Length: 187
Image (cartoon, rainbow, N blue to C red; front, side):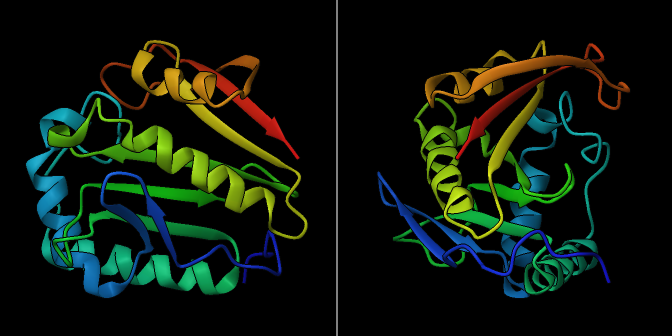
């Protein structure tokens, strides 16, 4: 079993402005997540290496189940964003990922094309930054994005993250340059 990043857990439900909430991703979110990804493939493909083909419902269910497991293990905390007045809806996916080493979590995100430009990703990243830095043992939060992804880079900039470095990265999606911006917020 992987080493937990923290003994704590973020809230399972985080209300955001505008009638949207982040909720812990559960297996029951598989159908909504599947529909959202399928609808957004063209929007996601330039930036997400996993967006090359439409996922099956079985795959989405498995990903949600895996998200529950890593949450319970304390290594990753996966969320979906949904509209409060539409139970089960998925308008984005967000995560606090333990892939950058001890004492740190990385925020990852994507937003449904029909909801971009409304501040949803910024509000969610703000809430997740606060939640992450409240966890025992977490002293740093990072947001990584390709240099050419101006929309993603605007989010940490708005939230007061500092640009820590630009690092070479393998190109895994069509719009990537191979140069990742690494934004950091310390406790």
